[in-house]
Image (tube, rainbow, N blue to C red; front, side, top):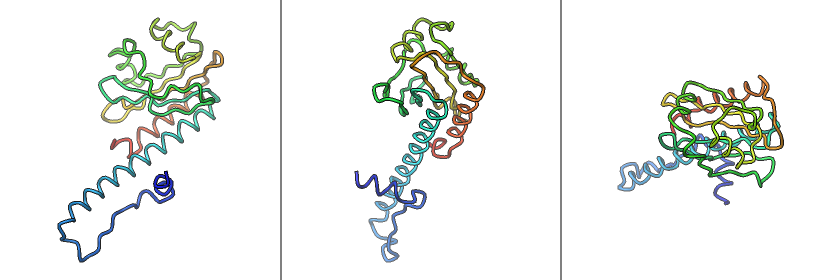
Length: 193
């Protein structure tokens, strides 16, 4: 834990392993280079994670919702919730993989095309039964989803859940989510991950 605190307190962009000039051609040089690559990847991951945590937290506060999550795609339309900001710990869905039979090629294509889906009331919305059941299992009453699109394709979904009651999503709510998704999609640490 102390190492983590130290690394977070450092200027992460400039962390390097420095070797002394007399050892430039030493047999350990390849080990130092390997350690530097490892450190660079660690710093990149920490910066990416910090940006995602900050983004989900700020969105939850601005939108005044119960939960904002990042659903990250690690495979062909397979993913899981990797980050969340919660109004209450019992609302956690961290690690959730979603309803496997609901998110398919059709939905993926819609989000690849930039689909934004705002559902004011899951009970009144014309959605698939498996989708409604899945949202109910997460205690969701209203749902707002925007894609995070990078040049390689659909990187993830940024999702806001209102669990207390139905909720109409304003144009400003949608704009804030889109701006946050674009910020994530253009961050070099995400583009390189």
